[in-house]
Image (tube, rainbow over all chains, first blue to last red; front, side, top):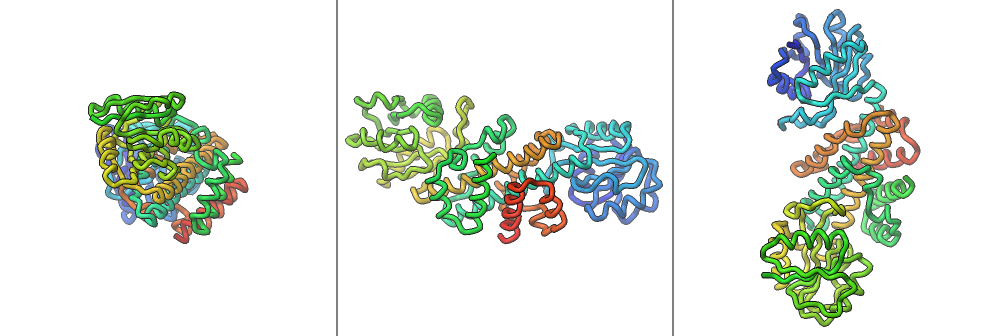
Length: 231
Length: 231
């Protein structure tokens, strides 16, 4: 049995708690960040609070002999000052009341002491999820990459929806294409999968498209088209 | 029974042929564009060739009494000069040897004569697919929206992959996030689904991110961040 304490009540903490309760190899204690006076002994203490609060919580655990980890994609491991410290970061966008299938979620793991990684790998295994060793510098880069593939992609969806709305076309007509585009890169390199007027150097279509856009959309269209053509 | 002639041998023609052969309500004849001297009589003639070739093929069918349609997302219906003409456009990105599940594909339909739309709707129904009435002007806008949600999104994936490759992080770590982002917009408005540093106005993270990018990536990051913040 692995004894786990989770500190926090946010999205990630709730979903992790829910998942660990169902894992037979785990004994779980959940704490909120206001009752940290008597932390029970545990193999792993998971700090799953907002980025800004991690340092404050970690300070209160500085005498703990347990492995102390946080779940953030952006905060460096070293903000935890304990001798045994690490990161246990599930890379997914969690929605409050939507159930999470942890078996599809990659966990980015990092520990100060190499022997502690096994403990985190066992936690990941108890959730039937997949573990990746990712150091703090790589995690920073992953977060940057995620801004492109998640936030910026979502903004492309927003512009697509706006164009549909303005022209009384149901946005749902594009859902299967959106899904296929997201699936395709799991078996074809995105560069090789690229199609469309930019890729084909179809100047006439690009010109027609620009004429139909507002000035901000034109700027986006122009710079991404250029980047597709040059990369 | 609906008697269908398909002219063409490309991706879309092959996948449509394959699907119609399995549809019990359809009698199918496939022709390549070099043997158009004796076109059999049919209820619908589907011209499924490259955009540039549609006009040439359509001219050879100008005396046909059948409903003559093309399958293009970008070509106007009027390039077909027949009295009975239309568009039968499956909105999906087809890959050569990958089987297509037509039941998930939206067909954008247009006909000159309103009574002909029923014939195309029956064709769509025979494939258990979904039909949408979309006129040529709306289809142009859909194609423009598709550049954003497909081509430009795919380019965001490419940049994400490049950042991963440069930092020895497996790109596959991001696949579940990419899939979730694509799924989320089927039940949440993309604007409401947006998260990340641009949305939060997190100036410090934006500054850190820009310092890690090359100049072209910086331009893309800056203009999309601005657009997220202003829209």
